[in-house]
Length: 243
Ligand code: FPP
Figure 1 (tube, rainbow, N blue to C red):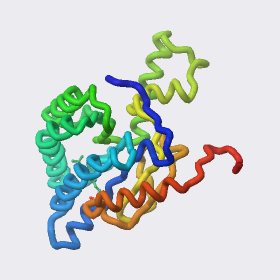
Figure 2: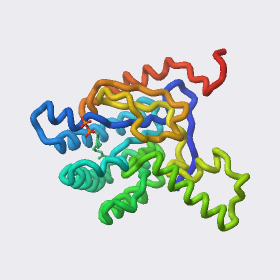
Figure 3: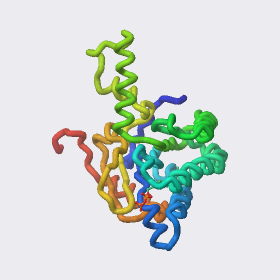
């Protein structure tokens, strides 16, 4: 796996993380079942990933299924899992041809074996690509990620490979699912809710946030470009005083 963290020298965001919200409402507004909205959402993922190189976005991370999403109806959960399987089967070659390196973050253990096998296959197929880094958060929750990281770190300490006084923010970050990724510069949430919903809490400490009203299935490359361009004008100081 390529663990080089690429940075860029232009003003735009290097890493954009997206909470893809509003599929259900988009479908309901059209008198359709919620899964119809998720299917439309999956088609947007393709367009957004394709737009990244032109926008100078090297890393894009999308929130596809949270650790809390299991609370949805069995029909919706099963429909989403089938959608993820189909997405990987249908898009694998296209993503590979576009030079996209795909990674998954989240706890895979609860996902069905067929989906886990497809995730492994897609990661392996695309591992040497570097045009765009697409990370898909599947059964992901930031508190769950930090908890799993802490458990693994505790094992290292208990077995004598890590001293408690060696634990610092870099060491902790190296145990997170995102250890190979740079921190997000920009977090976008669609569909009008101004919440983070347990997404990349540690990694987004200094990110800019954009909460936009557009439902995810209406998030065209043009909308993406407009949000990315707004970011370019911001003054990020990472806690330092204004110059
Ligand atoms: C939130 O909208 C969306 C989700 C929980 C699922 C996101 C999944 C996709 C966009 C499908 C495709 C993804 C991949 C990687 C193929 P919501 O259902 O909460 O919408 P609502 O708030 O309007 O009900």
